[in-house]
Image (cartoon, rainbow, N blue to C red; front, side, top):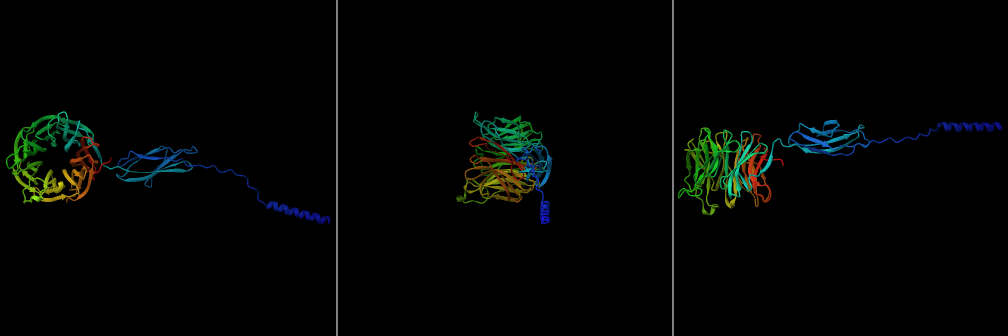
Length: 494
């Protein structure tokens, strides 16, 4: 019995030891792993944007663990830089007028990162601007614009002088970015008439306004002044290939020339010292006026004029203005004798503005045609060297447009400036037409209730445009000279 009890006790002990050995030991308590947070949020700014570069800068992204933070820059999916210590980067070799999107990554040594997005658009490859210029103490108006041999521009016009109670003459030079280089005011009473300007071969300038002609040096200082003792008003002036000065305008503004003729187109030639060589008058209808002039390769001249309507009779009930006018082109020899002359009209008041010589030996006329209800269309007429019309286009834009000037464009088309008259306002307008006279684009510049006028324009070598006019710089201000340098689509950047 005693042995049985001992055996049972031994078996139970063995079973208990076996169960104890099969059991896994309890795991030792573990410490939680330390966390590593990404750098804090930061902001990105893009500045100094040009046509091909942009400065990307950002605020410092601090790391919670005080680890070193470096940066990567990604633009349009392409990594431009990595492991940057600085807080800025210049992106280069960008395309002009292109929108870019990207981000900056701030990362610590453990590859934790924070991201900040950005976007920007590169600028136009063209230098553009819009500038107002104060000339005197009161209102000023642009008369004409010419490009100078040093790639600057000269603007001539008239400014009102309250002390004299007169509209007097000014000429101003600006550089290619619109900064004023010099300005000269000539106290000649020109009664607010247009001032024409041309650069001369000695890099001086010739100015004509009302019945005055001035020759200046390259800084606008007067070398000689000529007052023509006639009842005349000049519209355009050029230096001829022989160094002489030729001006065109009209005579008879105050007093009729005869019972049947009120005004005539006037052409004067002076030598380089301002001495008059000869005078020619044109026109036998009641009203004739000279507007512009170009010299031909043979040394003669082509004159743009306008003359009283001479075509088919018109019913009195159809008349919307007191007289009808046609465009009138006259070709002369070097002495002003007529080779040929032709009129172009369509029973409206045709207002001649500008004449340009074309590369094929012809000419293009820019002007306006006024009809009923004081409404004006822009008008473009292209003629060959004999005066035959190749294109005669009247463009109705839905608003009245008065042409100030026309320029030939490098693609064979035309650019025109002038003013657009809406219901309540007048805006500075510029239009681009193709070679067939069809509108490609237009822009109106100016603000409501101001009155803005485009006067003259030219195309620059970069295919953009330089346009001069005048406008108030702010509400109720006096008018100031306004110059716009535009890209090939007629735009400028603010």
